[in-house]
Image (cartoon, rainbow, N blue to C red; front, side, top):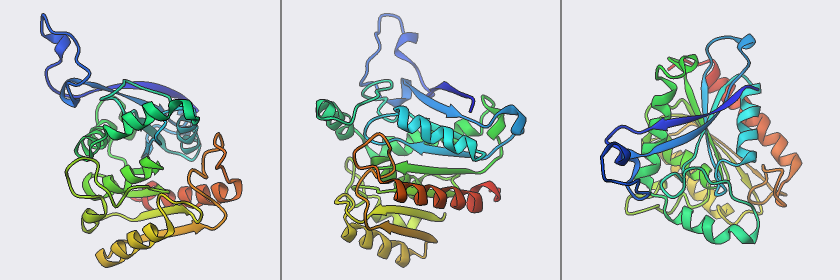
Length: 269
């Protein structure tokens, strides 16, 4: 599938536009860029497609997340993965082993819900901008894995313009990143259908956490579709990790594509 890296520039004054000032990594989004990995169907498939935002795991927009985007492009979507650690590092691609634990924890610990919401909103705006006209006016879904599953749940509560959300093993939905409310506390704001794919052997979210999330969705009247795979643990979708569980990953992917086909591909805003 054709793919490219886009540089999404946030509005506002940039330090390099101001003489005598150097780039400050702690400046914040207002003067930063955020890389997007974009994969899309071939031009022979048409000129306009719905889009799916892909929220990364704790390892950045690495090759696995790129492959997820490419698979979505094969299914008929423009898939866009924003590099959500950009306030700490422009575009890190971290490994799964012990050697990267410290830096992963640092980047994860720096995430703030208000920043995440801004980043997803900016990505949504990009899909409707003049920069890539093939997604203009088309519906938008979001899917995320691990911390990206949590980001997806948060986006479903707080980012207008989305048509459907798919969360894979979203850890820490019951905890805030920063000072604000937790994603689960915002459940009543969800106005779109939500899918969840979980591992029965997972501890983050645990089966008890999943039951808590499901109860909140029920209480709020949200349309949702949850499935737990008893033989799978955390990260079961990633074929580059020891936790990969092929049967569960295959079924969950089929569910995901079908869900987007129902709620995004065939449904305009």
